[in-house]
View 1 (cartoon, one colour):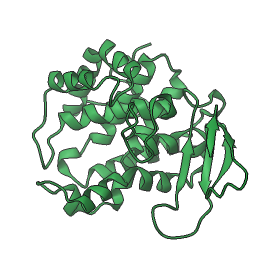
View 2 (cartoon, rainbow, N blue to C red):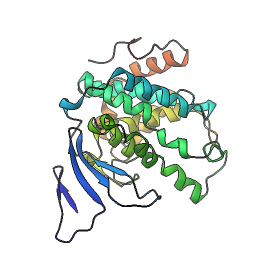
View 3 (cartoon, helix red, strand yellow):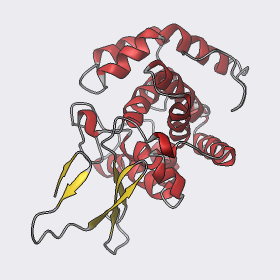
View 4 (cartoon, one colour):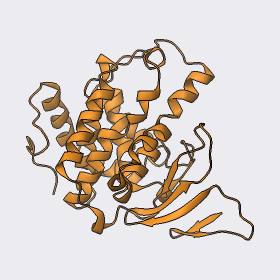
Length: 270
């Protein structure tokens, strides 16, 4: 099966287990096979630069639910207690810095809260392991975007706005060497490309069981080094343009002064 501009082209006799469904957030492929393994999942391919403007309304209760679920996942490890919150807020700032509308930025923000939802299926003994992971353990970690997408996909609005696609593809790399699907460049939903930078920044700033935390300057240099390989260069450029604002935002959150969803302690980039 090939895809051109979001339209599937199936050769004669194609037996692909996915069937297409067009949604406002992009072209959605739903798995039509049976079986308990991870192959049975929702796969969303969004080839637009960002989600459709006609699908940008998420009820406040959905936003609040996403925030709560993010905190629940982060509670598994005291060292990552604010990771999903950090990612959500950084991703929102990056989206605005890239010129996306406020409504679109809010969609990316919600996906940031939910990006690690699939880690609920990873045993704590693996998440908190201080030493190197085995191949099987690493495979379980790498499965979390797929599991997370499966968890949020029953909520139709998550599919329509592209949130599910962002959760599924936030560990893809710009050079095509990421997972789960090895997408590259603009094949990766823009929201997922934004979250990838926000996720990496937050992760580097936090201590983990297997390494010490880095300073903001060190983490920023690493992001710049990975421009055009791991990260979308346009997202990295947006990050560079507002890095002082993001550093201030993170400092505010770290000191417990960050407000909730409808309160903005710092003016986001216009």
